[in-house]
Length: 556
Image (cartoon, rainbow, N blue to C red):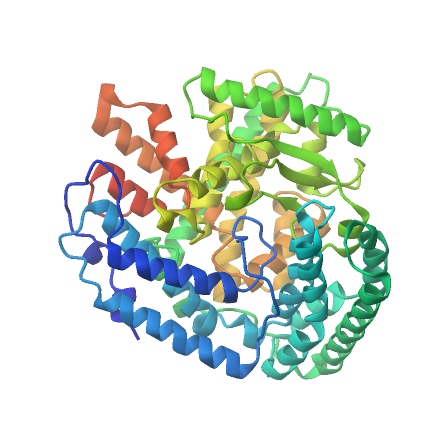
């Protein structure tokens, strides 16, 4: 094992004076280029949207032999990394060095510490149906190359599920139950998808139908095999303390123990509940917000609000929004995507599609909408602030276009989701929601959820919550609808370390801002600070802080 990946961050960062521009060291540039080309081919698909990446087309293989080969390839990258002599490098170069260490550690985490490919049936649903859905979030119609890739992903489903059946020796029963439930009605859903999709592709109907039928057969077989195994499967889902701490130290680069995370989350929970209570009391005599009553109005309201937010950011000197950044838009969910599901139904675009609008797909407004989209139907701005402008979409665009290619990639959610969550309260304090008191209540309720996510994440990872207990806890304490609560608990249980990133990342940014303000005093510029954070939005906050302030690593 490469011991450099396990060293404390403070031992890897050697103070130096940053150059005028951030220029990665040539040896590291080549290693990074080779690694990210490899990663684009082999990184697993997930149900998240921030970490999507442009990938080469073709079939994918999750056989044991393929996994053994990946392990050898990872060790080769680790050996190259260990041989790089970084002493004397500038601070930005050392930040790049540590970033590649984080990326290598993430692969090791996926292979060894949280090997979902060996213990989670939902992993293979992500490699099949989520992979297909992700291709379909890019709006059609689809040209010949896109159509061929869609067909390839459908045709790849039977072999991936067969490999999954061979790899899953003893998966936890709660994970298997979730996978079984998610595949209910899958044959009919795939059939509806194919009928709606075919006219937008260059595919022949017979070819598409035959591939979908084979995929449906394989998925039904996979579901039935899991059902038969359920009585004999273990109940324990917890990742365990050692693996969780390893993730925090080596992937997320967060210098906290699980108990510290719990204390931080609990303090923020108390703060959010108090502020929401004050706001509700203040607004008790005001008429409630009304839900938008049709999709056309919903789409139009978001467009108007997004334009207002962009101007607000620039006119108030909060954050730069370059003219080349396109728009965060709403669109009606196409039937083929509605039938399929299995991923976040949005398209943040990608490095090669910066000239296209970001899209969030919607279904009709109704009282039955889930937690977040019911809030959006009341006022589109809270979701736009987190997901669109100034949140994920703007951050990703700025990061994809930044000069340093090493910083264009996703490493961990701590920075990305921290920025998205930070943007919500930052815009509240800046006055964006002054004209809608009940929207301020929504922001405070979002804060309650993100604080609770820390507790749920940690306790699921350490085995102090079961999946059902976590879902019930969220449902009762946010509060939120049962379906959204269960979806959240499932995601947190299978991917430990992600749910806490919203709250912990936000707290790191706020501490970073306070330190910058005190150090720079009258020279401090909020716009300049935010421009740096957003441009480097893929870089863990501990590293951003060290580079920006030339400060040694200490706990926030």
